[in-house]
Image 1 (cartoon, rainbow, N blue to C red):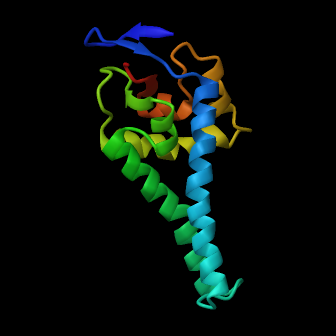
Image 2: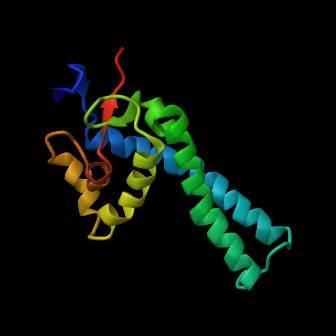
Length: 148
């Protein structure tokens, strides 16, 4: 699907399956790192599983680290490595230009809204005319194919 943005730029929206594939790629590399760090923390004896220090370590590594890494990629490249591998990126829905950091933070938080009701906000991408999930609609972003 293509659309003319506010600046007359033609956008080709990335559909559900392309975005799903990018997510699989991202989970593979990101959670290899996350669980590698957790495993190291346990095996090295630095943290005993179940202790309060481990709980803090676990929250930092499983929740905060992925958020920081994903937002850093979105802000710097408008895409995660999975999106880059599939030649898609996140842009402002109105202008087709790079999304602002604030929009990207809102988009990340919008994932929780999209996921809570049985992933309906994610699956919505398959039906939406602009291929937007609820997190995209909340943040005012779209995911598009790069021009080649």
